[in-house]
Length: 295
Image (cartoon, rainbow, N blue to C red; front, side, top):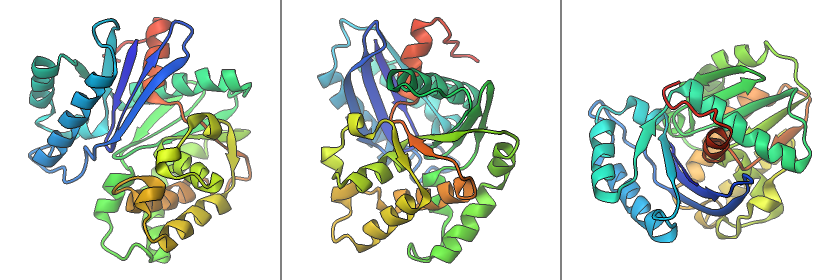
């Protein structure tokens, strides 16, 4: 099965076999939420998404495999998302479902649980945070909540210099206050982090460049807060940070460091990074017959 997650910043897809192993992956930065307005998705964002989907179709065998494609917060907000996806369906044959924040959090946890089992990590007492582009999903056990902040939305609202750490920290604290109240309601033994910011931080810690990224090296890595701050310092100092984290992602990763810091810095527990998330959770949910796209 081909599983597709079109997020507010990134298009991620994978081919999963019947044993729920990922056998092929695809990832492309599309910036869906960039310049999102009252009219909806920008023309530039739609073109980036379309071009990435064309590339995806050229690399995956859609004729021999079923596909499930989901879209998240930027498309929940965009007034023109329905028309855009109707065009994608008729032109490319890829059928997207815009899912709720609740279902996004639930499926993300399924994807993480599947990988955690393979790593031998028990996540029964784990808090899970998926910091996205326009929303953030947090879960503990059967408690799933989606919050309306993310790295793209946060960065677009910042009107100060990227190196002004004091203003970043204060603004991030405001944006994440409700999420922190939710987190404070649970007793957990560790925090599992999925999505592009923690995986980028882990990759920077290993000295990997963007094109050298390997999820097998990232899955199960344990980070501390200094790793997040070190990542920001590395990006500030880099002559060509795009080589490290991908095109047009430097500001977003740094913004994500401050959002993440405001949520987790006070907790003295391990921060475990898992690359698997929503796209893998779609496959797991379908395989286990737990996938209700209208949930």
